[in-house]
Image (cartoon, rainbow, N blue to C red; front, side):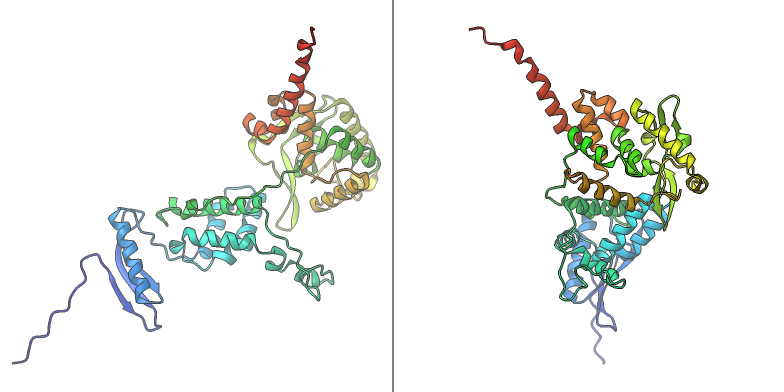
Length: 414
C-alpha cells in the first residue's frame, strides 16, 4: 500500500500566509480589521521573508490591541495629490492652496512620495525633516539652473559652483510638518489610516526669525526718504493702519470713505494661477472698517486727485484700485517688495520686511499707550490673545516705562 501523504501543517487562524512572488519579493496575505470596522484581506510586499514575518508580527499585535490596520494601497504621493485636489482646493483660500501645493510639490513628494501611505512611519518623517533642514533648497529645487537658462546664474549653476546655502528656516520646517499633519489627519478621518504617525514627530527646534519692528524715528526717516516716491501713499497706509500687503494692493476707491475718514477692508490682491486678481481677505475677522488718521486721510485725498488727473492711469485702472503702477495696472506684489527694499537702503534704516510695517504699526500704537483691545481691532487679529502673544515684549516694555513714572512717590525724604 502506498503510504499516506502527511497533512500539510496549516498556519493558525488569522496568522496569514507568506509566499514568494515571481519577481522575487515576498507577499504577506492576511485578514485584518480596517478602520471602517470591516474585515478585509490585505497584502504586504517585502524584500525578504524576515521582513514579511516582522510585518505579520506587527499587524497581529495591532489586532491584539484592537487597533485597526491601515488598508489603503496608495503611495504618499498619490494621496497628497488626491488630498490637494479633493479636500484642500475646494475648502481653502486660493492663496492658501498655492502655498500648500508648493510645499507638497517641493518638499513632501520628493522626500516621502515613494512610501506607501499605510507604511509611513514617524521615523520616515523625522529623517526626512532632518535631511531637508540640511539641504540647500536652491540646489535641491534647481532654482539657479532655471536662472542659468536666462544667463543669470548666481550660485549653483555657475562654474565653479558656489552654493548659496539657502537652507529652510525653522519656521518653514514647522509649516511643512503642520501641513503634512493636516493631510495625514484627513486620511485618518476618512478611514484610510488608523492613526496619524506624524503627531509622534516633534516640531523642529531652533530660532524662528523675528524681526524687530521700526521705532518711531526709523519710521519717520523712511517716510521722509519716500515722500517723492510714486508709492508714498501705499507705504503710509501700510505703516499707519497696519494693512497686509495684499490688503493694501487690493484697496479700491469704493472702499475708502474720504468724507467719513474710514476704509472698508474686504478684499486683497494676489497672484494666483499666473494672474493678478482680487480675493476675499484672509479670514472673516479680517473684514473690518478702520478709521484713518486725519493727515493720512488728506494724503489719500491728494493721491486721488493726482490719479484722476492722469488720463492714462484713470483709463487703465478698471478695478478702481487706490494704488496702481504708473500705467494704471495692478501692482505686482514682488515688485512692491523690491521697491520697498530699495527705499529702505536709500533711507539708511535697519532692514525689515514689507510685512513688518504691520508690526511696526502695532509697536508704535503700544508706545503711544493704546490699549491691546484697540490694537487688536485695528490689526484685525482673531482674538486679543493673538495680539498680546505677538507683541508681549512691546507691551512689557511699555508697562515698565509706565511703572517707572511712579518713582516720584519715593523721593528722598532724608
